Length: 170
Image: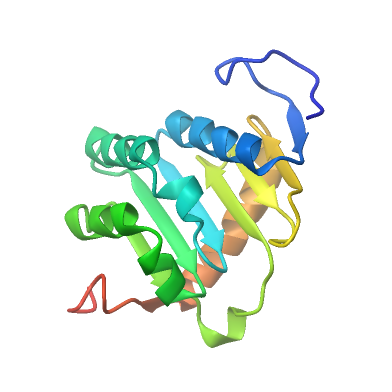
């Protein structure tokens, strides 16, 4: 890992280049803990080892309960894989329907080979290719985080409800 500043999540303001899945998973958890208003996740297939852990589920549940305007949005391409490997996230989507949502990419947006997590339009974790353990992480990079958030929002607007999670299409 390359970085320029302090080591605790609360102190980090630097940009990190991480080449370890384990370290990226830990940093994703740190980012989720920092979220105060918005969590955006895009993945061709949602990583269960990142998001389907007891820690991540507890963090997401606390986040959803903390404020009525909080929102977490998961955008996936491979719905079957994502549902099968993320039972905790799916249950949270059902339990906190107004706060935690998962949707399927529109066909026009499929084929992207990257994953990203954006928190509060200020921090992010970005895996530029899902076949490589190469992650960029920043705890204070509003410009880059907003760019990823805008991409997520554009895809979200075209995305489709997943009937297995929201059978009424709500």
